[in-house]
Image (cartoon, rainbow, N blue to C red; front, side, top):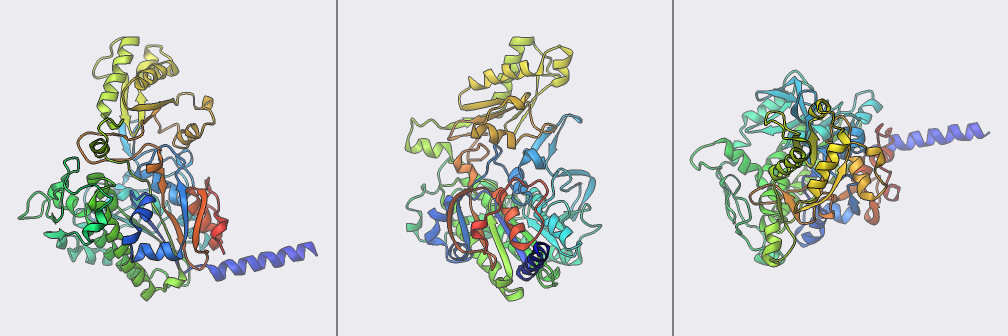
Length: 540
């Protein structure tokens, strides 16, 4: 009798999963979009973001639990449900010790770019399957997984290892890689031939919101903002690049640092839905979309700028256009929409100091960290020749020591790492340093665990450092992200669709919970390396 009851229960659950499976799942990542934008800018949202906030399941305390808050690692977490300790994406770029060269997170010399020239890009460095991979396996590869972004690493790492295609922008074209296909589909070639990206040349990004919208922001046109590719520091911004008379490569940098980058991306996404018949093939498809313009604008102008608010408002409008299009082609009621971000953003230090001149905020130069670390090693172990230094590289807060040189000098790796750690801790702006040559000795403090989640032995450095709050790494103006403070870790996490209960949820969660939650809600097997939890509270 117990066996019969179990069989009936399994048949019921199987029928429920099939009946509740959406036609299309759309996962949206807003690159560099902290959760606070949703509350700070809420009065000015009347479109797609407003729809999600009003009808979606909104987890207001979603924080990344890793130490590396950058684009590659963030996008890798979202749909694998695990961190770099499992998926291997420890940073945007790391040192390949075998080749002695920098390795970009989606580098792939075994493939070629389609639609441009040069080496290809692929998810070969991603070591764990994603939700999309499990969806493809679940339907014996009948489901389609298409991933699209302005950036290659965002599109590729969201799509996973078994995606049908990933597309991203290079200059005037959307491109892909021979990892996915032998040639671009005809519809992509037609889109590129339409010169949709180039048609934005000469366009003007104007202020659309009333002056009162900016009362709680910084003033416009301040010297610590970046004049990105001659966009200027104040509205209106003319999108031409450095040469106003003709197209040059700088135009494309200006274009994606404006709403035009998001609008063009949405046009391409809508074309993909139609041409690939997504959501209309009798099986669940997955569409991943990462908007990068929010990141470029945030870097250039900072989170308290007029431009960031206008960019958020533009995203609200373009998501409204996308949702309206999806409703007319697939039916929004037959879709699941998930929205999150890969990381937040730090305030511009000069903005903070303009209000409080004595504030402990500033910039740290990577070369200064490297030079000081090298000097400490020289003072302790003897001067190394310039072509064979003690410090091979400092990249994305990872410090790589010259292990062959240490071995030849009979110097223990852990001893050398302690010398560098002591020197880094003495420098202004550095908060903490972890010696990763012996990770098993690390403690259980939450920050120790965050560092370990960003650690993969073959790719991580020998040390990892974190700057003080309100300090950023880099020269010049604008701002960046990376350190695991709330302004970098706290991001949106919203789920909307028939499978989910709308409302606001205040429990502590992580973006790593997105993938297993989608799996549980649709009856798909969990990604194999998942570290995230199922957000049962929001599942009907």
